[in-house]
Image (cartoon, rainbow, N blue to C red; front, side):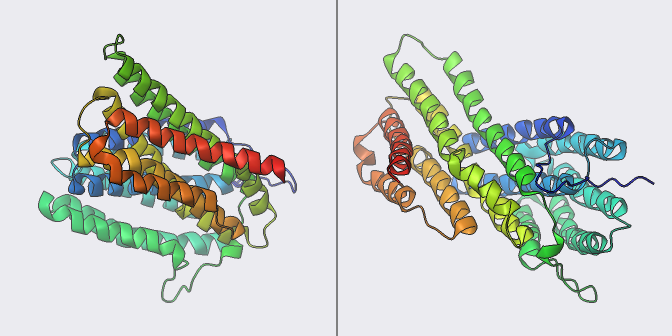
Length: 384
């Protein structure tokens, strides 16, 4: 049988296939579902549940991206596998809003189907490649262990579901850090994770664009139903658009291209990709999602009272985003973007003036901070 693995040409960038982009469309729906659920449940419990759902969605997507980094998406069996994953992903996404209610088992079964099914397919696809076969056998064992917790949570009472699923996520997120160690099978080695850095960077970048696009969709949909004669509404809308543009600029700066180059030429690209593109983007994505919620709150009530929940989203979203980019930069170059950390501190200090502000003022202020750090970094880059 013809190999399903990509044919790698040294020095050439493995392009992202159209079927991979098609697959990503499912996750536009998933991210929107998580964002809307957070907006509807702006409580500590609602925030925790939204964080868990986002973590699950991200994990399903990033594991698939690792797989398509190895597999050739132009091969028929690979495309069929991705189409099946898309169908199951739609079920998972549809169940998200009620995952902690009546549709818990549906969500759990769909998520487990994606994780276990994709890994089983990969195990078959690389059966002639010893190192990858052993690697994915270990991964499959870990995912089967977490599957028990996911399904047990789906079967449990809603009040108990949280604890089962927290444990399941802990197993899934710990496994790469533990190199998928399995007694009798040993552990995986990052030098076996032969990835193409440019492809991985592009895939993660495309997911970030999905999240930024979801932010714009929420802002546009909310703005469409409001009173356009209100200057405050227009100001909140402009602030929402500019904050999204600022986040795009901060993420897709020259550093993003440099990160791709660094991974491509790293002595151990698997280790670097695990840190830079498996774990750290979750903070960036969480920040974008929270900003989307804050934009909708500011648009709906620009001159209203700033509730505690609204203040946390208006200030916390940009903080999460900036912290995520700082962590990503540190994992690749070992350098800390102090300017971005200073902006996080400035945003945190905004909590002191919350009682005397409005959602619009906080929105404009947080947008100004995001734009300011971008301008400062551009000026700094030109001066060096």
